[in-house]
Image (tube, rainbow, N blue to C red; front, side, top):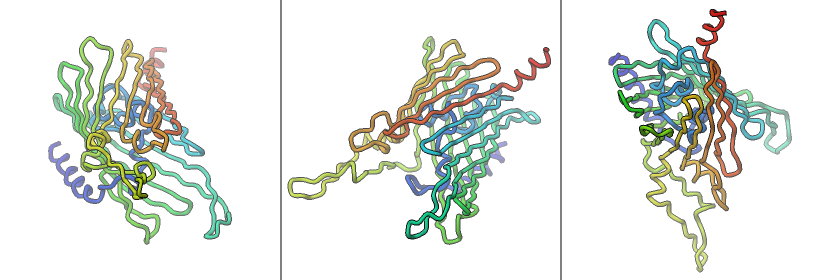
Length: 348
């Protein structure tokens, strides 16, 4: 097992040099978007909550655990305009080892095709997709996990393909409700560009660390995650929002404070646990709040909320994530415990 993950680290190290970019320069950017209600309700990032939800494998493969066995989840996200996204996840054991599989698909709808003069010549479609395989292994309080994903993108008659890998670890306190997670995400490379002349696409690489804890005798669970740790300064100083003219007509640029730059690396939130069957979540992503603001304010950008109802054998999840100041996006997730369904049929 040690040799296996050592080889993976070498592969990741070779890919990291090709994956250090942020903000408009990444290919396959959809890989960094939340694909289900569970993560969307937590501000879009949570890599340390080791609960029963099979969708956690999308955030950190080391979160795979026995409570997810034989769970099948399907999510639907109606974005703005004609954009729709779907995802699905499943986890189970095979020959005594724990695996998870995932699918993430985004369809950007039908768009008009024009020539250089702006004349409409037809229509075209665009879509992105990823298929992933995850594996996790637990030794005592520690779990290591790895995800290998194949990603594709299609725009009209052009297509691009790439491979990426996530490597994660989780430490779980043996007695307390406290976990710490670390994950290296989307280290990979492009196998095929849209055209031979196109620039090389860069994967949305990220290094994240976070913790989730529940104080004893309290119904609240709290989490905090730090992301983009490989890139200290991820702030974009928007000239439209942060520049003005002085009395002499000179351009004055408002500087982004050190505290704001640090806060843009942080996502935090809380989860209210009611009778271990009903969860209400609130999240906040400061990077989204600052970078998706409008001239007259950020409004709800970066905030999220949602709930998860755990029934037998069906789990129902909903989230609303305000990824921009103009409005939010809804996430709907349904999860079925196939093991429970099979047992019920056997009883009958």
